[in-house]
Length: 321
Image: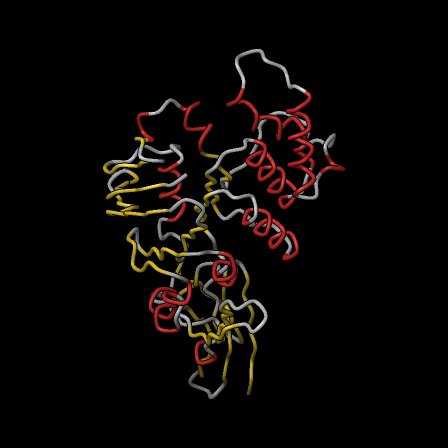
């Protein structure tokens, strides 16, 4: 199973989110989409799995126009693990996974013995077999994500689309999921937040920024300190792990900017000015919005020094002679 995306455009209203994106995934490859938050990774995937309709572009799976297929036909070829996995009704875990068998059935068909074995096998692979009878709504975020991955596995497609599939998962389950995906002989296109996981598991990477493909290649070709600095605005050191043979990225804090890293853009947000009175002196200054706290020090005409820390709804005040 192979995928070809040509010149994909998509806008949310008048705001372009994806701009002339072209992607190729060869049969059996594990290809990753990486990039900062808001770079367009999820929007590209949603256009591919038809949650959104492209403004322009073509999408082919095994040479056939995906956008002209029926939804059932495309579901037989492509399974999806998305970011939003809310279920509005009260289903058991095994019932959620059984939904992955729907494209293989006609209306009113019941689960066969084979279906039940596929469901059990899928749950076992994500460590959720013992929770098959549990209420899905009562699970933690990480447990829900594993159930959705099991549902995609039960769908038995040759192509998997994964939108940050290991969100909310502990490191052991992250590796278990990626190990499992790597060994089921499927073709995979995945948006991945963790650069080290992308370097460890992906054959090739597409780096997106502001809705455009900026770089494409093998991890060792595109995960360089220079490119990571350009795209993410952070410094790093990169070495090859002697045991895995894969890249290992260590990020370096920017202590000059308080250890928060030097991002490409930084904007202060200010709310209405606040006033306060201390020892008969009235002071007025801008009030930063939540998340933009900072200290403010000044000296009055009598030589008294005041230090204030403002942010959100909190206000601290100290007085030094």
